[in-house]
Amino acid sequence: MLTERFALAGSHRTALYGSRAVGAPDPTEHIDAMLVLRRRLPIGPHIAGAPPMDRHVFALAHGASPDDVRSVDDFARQFNLSVGAVDLRRRMVTLSGTVAALSEAFGTTLKMYQTEHGTFRGRSGELFLPASLRDVVVAVLGLDNRPQAHPRFRRRPHGPSAEPMPRAFTPTEVAKLYGTPPGTGHGETIAIIELGGGYRPTDLRAYFEALGLPTPSVTSVAVGGGRNAPTGDPSGPDGEVLLDIEVAGAIAPDAHIVVYFAPNTDSGFLDAITTALHDHVRTPTIVSISWGGAEPAWATQALHAFDEAFQDAAALDVTVCCASGDNGSADGIDDGKAHVDFPASSPHVLACGGTRLEASRGEIERETVWNDTPGSGATGGGVSEVFPRPAYQQQSDVPASVNAPHFRGRGVPDVAGNADPATGYEIRVDGQTVVVGGTSAVAPLWAALIARRNETAGRPLGYANPVLYAIASAQAFADVTAGSNGAYRAGRGWDPCTGLGSPRGGGFWVHPSVTS
Image (cartoon, rainbow, N blue to C red; front, side):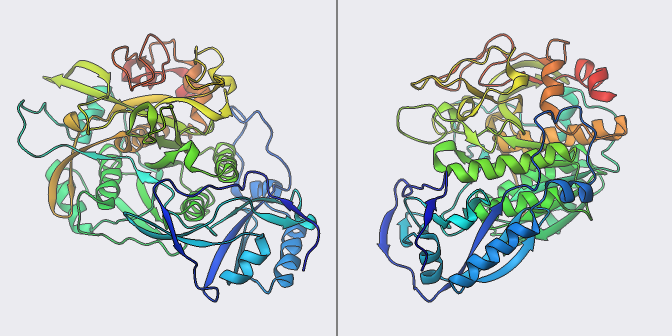
């Protein structure tokens, strides 16, 4: 039907490791594809310190062009595809059609794959588009609906142990040890992104009543077919959802918590993030993300489409906190190389690493890199193989990647906090009290601390990274210098295990750059 086509940059995918092809999907089945379009005008490189943009003004300046949408309409008609949702603010267009029609439209072959966890529709190779859409389409997501991300939480082992377990903490105890800013998060909205599981209000009421706190205002938002759907398994995605809500809600009890539930696919994940960022009704000031995957598990087009969404956040004065992973420097890939977790490796998010926090009598005794016994996990961290080193890290002695050819990329994480499940957080999930850790806990921890800071300062912190690196030498962090996550070791100053370190109230929250 079309003779002149081009391969969409970054669209190449390989088969999921450990999966096997088991046949073809029904060619008459109707599925959706999400197209991410270019900006009408690019966002300038100097985001930090720039005045925040009104969401409506931002959409007019940096959303998608109606002319580009019309080009997509023409493409859809040629292949008997239906145009569904169109959102100029988020630069997204949904195309619907049969498996056969979409496969032909994008020049790909879809197959069914099986893993030990189930089956999914996948593809390999590149996607192809007509010349009329060159430079118009940034990414095509959703044709491949493999599970894209994993929750970054770990339950404390609950079987018999040769040694007594150290003391676990409530979220409020951890926040107090770190020195919280005053306030309760009043007037702030924390968006939490979830890709599975759910919560029950009865669990929330019981948990916060036991802490002597009011139950925070929690709203569930369904995105793209996702929904609040508790599984009843505390070790499943419910553990992630309740950990995120209870940590954020305990530390910032007066913040409005909005949980965006979406399917666990690359398109579902991006849909949830952009829905939260451009939610002009609830207007989140902070986004907490505790799901991720190693950089090689992502198509390059997805990495850049997500990073562009996080640039939106920076322009809109929204802070995005992301867990850095729970599988050490390998990030769960057994290929002998080091990998960092995404979306934590985006230079436009605050990547949150993990420590082991030991305290008594209300004082911190020791804090080291989280790298527990085999099977219990370790903090993610290292050097991106995709994103170059950002300006705010130029003076931070970020090493080159340990992998050849030793790319000098964005260093992960930026900050850290208690994550070891052995010294983890007491939470309530599916009617049970459990102790949970992982960098999943550190993202909502920092989100809640920033909510309190925002309330006190009277304005959002927004794009936090340039600000935090600028005050790193002003006793704003506790430097964590002991331990490793595998390929990288902690040391003085920034390191690829715990970043700048964990928060300390005396230096961090009162610093003029943070409060003015």
